[in-house]
Length: 238
Image (cartoon, rainbow, N blue to C red; front, side, top):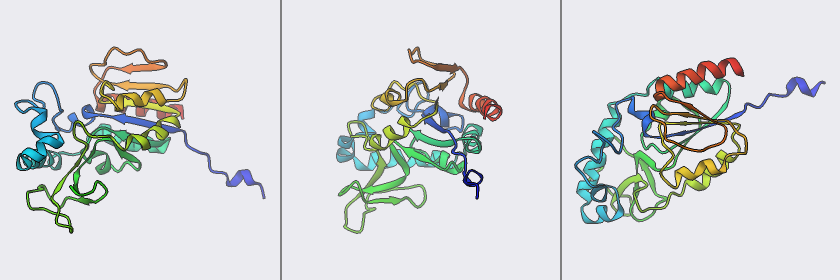
């Protein structure tokens, strides 16, 4: 028997680092800027552990509104393009987004750095996590131990535990796409420091930041247009 006939070719690893701009074209408001979610509301009032202790009802309603926004949105063609790239690559998505649009586009491998809006966790332990049934998480919603549930979100001032899982992913990349994020916010911005030397990096952003990164190609377009362009190109290259 010829072993080579049974050898399945390993797909190159494509790591996608996605941010708020990825979901903006689905109608999900971004965190900052004109019309951003924080407009008229200080970050300290809704997205810190201190805010939750001071006014948990306000914080829960803020995230309920965000959840309604997400549930009323759908994956865009950029999300679907990433799913289509699985034909050619082992696609591993590391996202700063807390929405579930990558999941709804059926991408296979997704790591959420900053938590997941559609989940809650107990205030007694970060490891007690539940899916949220519907739009709302309210005061009085508790875990079996009687502790109030909070959004499963990494708030400002909290550690980002999933960084430990993200670093080994980026270290194995054969190709990287950065889409919808300026990669200026730490610790997520440090992930590119762990990319293998010489790996090609494609930055998809209609307003790309001025960065000095080796092997960088800038595609000054939105997520839908830019990722569709890369899908068409990569399908010919692989």
